[in-house]
Length: 123
Image (cartoon, rainbow, N blue to C red; front, top):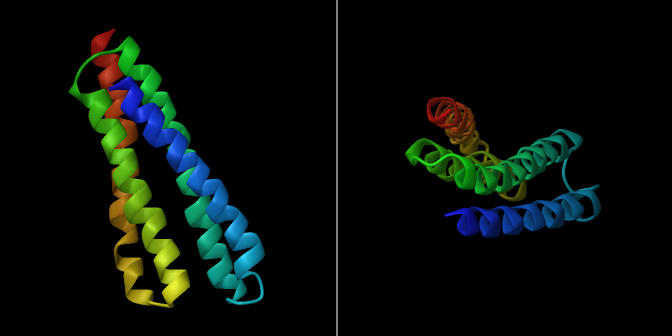
């Protein structure tokens, strides 16, 4: 399990950096400043939670149990739902995708909660 989350975290981090560069260089002047900020928000949360996947990789070696592993999957789901919906919203100008974003936010929150619970209950 640690290897899986390390691989996923590394891929997600690299993708976040690439998307950040694309936003800064490819979208500037092509979308409104508000949409560019929305894209940047997606990149920020994407990168933070890519690093969270690396933390989960390490945490699974210290504390066993399903909550720590579930946290990793929730962080991955959050990246896809939260950041992914923001990317697609900006690139396709499809505002209804904003309705998907909160589910990603809830995934992030639940992931942090499960990570804390998994570590706490194992101590």
